[in-house]
Amino acid sequence: MKKIFFIVILTIVLFTNISFAQYLLKSKELNLQKPFSRNSPLTKMVLQSVGSSGGFNVGVGSIEGEVAFAIGAFAEIKTRDISFIPQTNYWKAKKQNNFELAGLIRFYFSRKAISPYIDGGLGVNFYKSEKSDFTKLSILAGGGLELTNISSAFNLLIDGKYKLIVNDGGNISAFIFTAGLKFPFR
Image: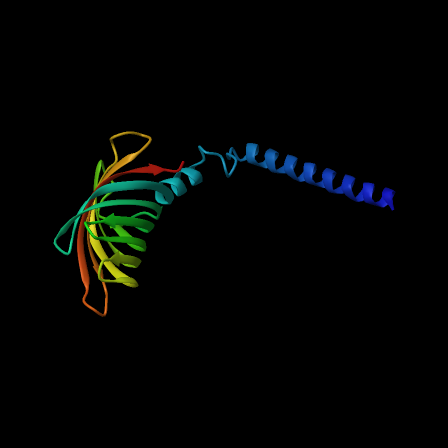
């Protein structure tokens, strides 16, 4: 039994090495780069059109006429001009606060040093105040600017959002203005 096992393993190793050697020989003959090389044209094209990043933002808002402090964290999964943004947000005004889990679709108008965008989506809110405590759906719409030439390690975001928390006892509206940093994953 040990001999058969040894022969099978040896055959697999030899077959793998021969196949890999043929691959290297063909790629050199055709003057091709390895398909997953960082400098291959295919890899460059994919990295330019698709990517991901993460970041955070802080700012102020107006929630039902009260000034609020806002903080959030997000990830971005992008294609050429459209991105999916899962995010968490927290804001606190005098006697009310809200934690939100949201998903946005973002559309970029251009990909230059200053990239304007609009976005919109839905969120789930865990709202608490003196009068009520509930979990409700929200609708988000907004836009902003992404400044990409600040640093090679991060981008600066300036963002504004209108949020409407849909509630049976009366909708809650908020305007949130934030600035943040986005760190591309390379």
